[in-house]
Length: 181
Image (cartoon, rainbow, N blue to C red; front, top):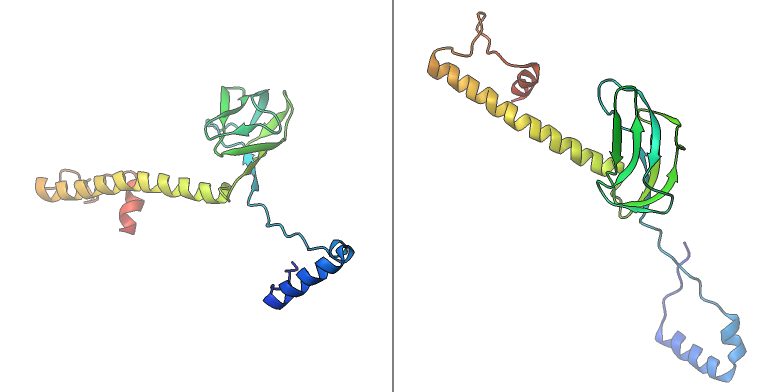
């Protein structure tokens, strides 16, 4: 990117005296126009797993068009599988830039449904990481508390939560959380 030279008092005084003497010289020189890059990012909104091992769905209806502004939890489309009909909602605030399927097309799980132009870098990587961290923290806190209370209960109640081999009865998720503590 080219930057204009810094203005000095000598430059300003010489340009004002030359502009008064001849108006044609000031109109022939032009200043470069600089624009900052757009902070908007286009994110591909992918079809997430809607449950029950469904790998493909049929797009039944679009609730948005290209150019529409959407907010989080706005309805994007309705899809139908052999087991269920589900309304897909937006995870992002932004403007729809592309629809990847027509009505009655088959979409695979993980494939992009629409492209959304989001402002200020709130793209998929940033928000997905936050959501995963929140879900992990939300799942780990009760599991860790349950493991601690089970361990405390074992000491106080004389082995009330222990199995025959001396292990505490717990689900695999609780065991993995307690092994990291």
